[in-house]
Each structure stands twice: as C-alpha cells, then as structure tokens.
Image: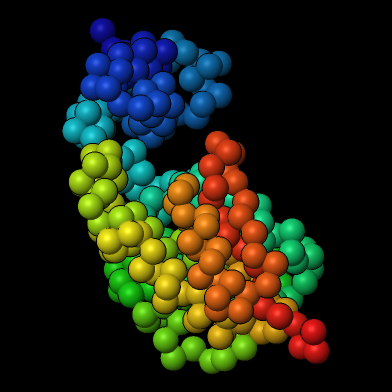
Length: 287
C-alpha cells in the first residue's frame, strides 16, 4: 500500500529522530515536500494523498542521505534566506538564519528608494548581496570571492532572481585592487572558526561545507585583521559596514575596527541573543 503524505511525514520524522538529526520534524517535512511535489499546505489539507512509487523512492534516497548527515540544503540544492531562495552547492557556505542579522542592521541605514553602492566581500552564494538588492531596488553591488566555483553559484542566483543587472561578481582576494572611498556599504561573512575547532563541528558542517569559508586561522580572527583596514579604505566617508562574527569575538573584532579608524562601532545580537554582527561607519568628511 502506498504511503500517504501524513504517514510519510511521520515515517521520515521517526527515521531522522533515530539518526539523532537536529530538527527532525522540519527536515522531514522539507524532504517530503520536495520528494512528493507537495506544499506544506497540501500536507495539512490533503494528508491522505498517496505518494507514487517514484516519489517514495525519491524520499527514501533523500532520507538515506540525511541520515548520513548530508545537509538538507545540499540534498535539495536550495536554501531560503531572508525573502529569497538561493541555489546551494558544496562550493558555498549554506546561508543561515544567523546571517540574516546583517540584513536587520544594514537595511535600516538606507531608505527603500535610496541609490547606493555596496560591496560584499566573500560573497559565496550571493546571499547577503542579493537579499539587500532585492529589498533596495535603486542599489547596485559588487560581490567578490576567491572561489571561482562559488562565483558561478552566485551568478546563477543573481540571474534567477532577476538581479544580474545590478549585481557584479568578480574573482578576487577580499578588497585587493578595489578603489579607495568608493562604496556606501560594505558587508562580509568571513571565515571565523578557529582552525583547531573545525573537527569538533557537526558533520553537516565539518564534512560538507567548504573549509575555505570556515577556517579563520589559529584564533578565528585572521580575516578580520585583513578586512578591518581594507573595509575602511574602500568605504566612502560616512559609509557603513557590517560583518558577521562568532559568538565570542565581539571584543577583538570591535577593537580591530576601532584601530582601523571606524566610528560608532557596535555589536548586534542575533535572535538567539548571541553576539553576531559588528557594525559601524567611516568618519564623514569635515567631522
């Protein structure tokens, strides 16, 4: 007898619980939706709809991969971030809700119809850059990444979202070669995990996320030492910046940006009340 949507969801949840997967209910639903071509609403309103043999086989494949600790974003090839949907591959860091805290900080600095130039250093999938551009239709931006594979993912995401005309994507090492005092906003989610801690991470991260996007050096601060002076260099006077940090990095990262000349340096917490974004601005002219 074919599995119904509701029975398939319950079965998937039990299997993921048995594999000690965090968030088994949500993961089971997401995998079922993709395998069965069903929406969340359809699972609730038409719970007894049977799965086809092909849909059951697809769900079985998805569950086996998740039980092996492959991230749901890699299994499905996509991940929602802010208000957009992004293609995700093993070449890019999976966008996380924690990183949406950068959007909470920067969108309040620019009016909806304001024209401005932004820079995303370590653009990855394009998550931050594209989410900002989607919210601010008069803005333009440049995303830079050292990984050509990541840039290909970001370009595809920009095209699918209809943002390719306002989002440039270039290969580079942080802000090297970029002009002085050119950007109104600079954002970055750099690698900030200490090298020795990488092997202690969950298998979904340790074994499936690009090491380049995780490893922040011996103390996790290598990228910030390079970024702080470079961000201040490329910002226009009065320009804003926001960078994601690890939960214990508030003091050293704030110190690095103050030493580089940043003004109004402050740290904002994420929804879990963890320090998450260090932000500030470049001193305006004449002040």
